[in-house]
Length: 403
Image (cartoon, rainbow, N blue to C red):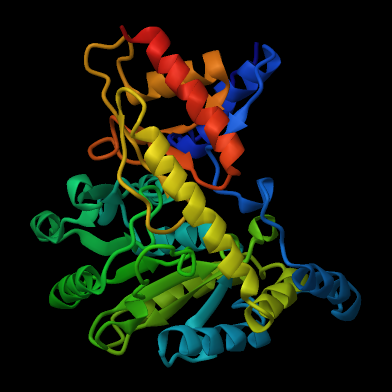
């Protein structure tokens, strides 16, 4: 018998919780369960539709562009449109040379972590936080250092903890605002505190702002508006606000007056050249999405607010569950009290719920072992009748197992 070829320990160590739950979900579907998939933040799987003028631009682009390779940094006309968007939205002055177009924010995270990290380097991430950051930090043999978001204070970031967890191996500080998975929207004071820390310690602030226009309670404050002495990389994309998740277009831009990240830019650009270029026709559609009517966003936020309000009310009525209200993004992150129950972990709870009722959430420990354990993430995208069915099944499941 031939010796089996081994996969790298880096690859086998990947464990993306949001997709991990699709395995028991597929088994439940085979067993005849109707699935209610509240695990993935994909607006287009529900009653949110990519605007027609985006789609028409893509159709035309396939005919009008030469369908050859594009600019490795991203098409210049899209980068110029991004510059205009950031000026209009946040009042910031950047140039097209500061902008890098990627195959979704996910590719940008991969490239950034591959550039920042040598084995043993540390990156501060929100706890709970979006799992891709942790996965790629670990993939490149770095160390994920979570900082607490204080649940009792509407998931306010614990900036005192950030300061205590900075070491001489800290390479970056990540913030996700509006936040996935908690639905928190950080106020200006919190964002200024992030900037003060970054400037004081010369640590780049990486701000993931992909949900920047999905805010239905409060006001979004971009890290791009911080003081000039804060070294920053701002991440954004077209999957959420622009309802183009499957088109895989994202971007980042640098704000680094002191030039602390000149070598980071060089290292990232070398990787962008190696991947050749982002999808060229989809970049034309992305440009159109920035320049055409934006009224669909108002409708999206209206629906999401109603669904967030319903979720907040309904989940807090269910035994064992307690949740804070979401203010933005697409998610809520309820706490589940497992003390004295049959479930040893939030993952056990979520997987059993999938098996018995077909309701698919994501276990909170997949977003952070230290600060996400004992929770789960639900998605607010489904219409209220679907949410009502899912939460009703969740309540029935809990009451069946808890005296």
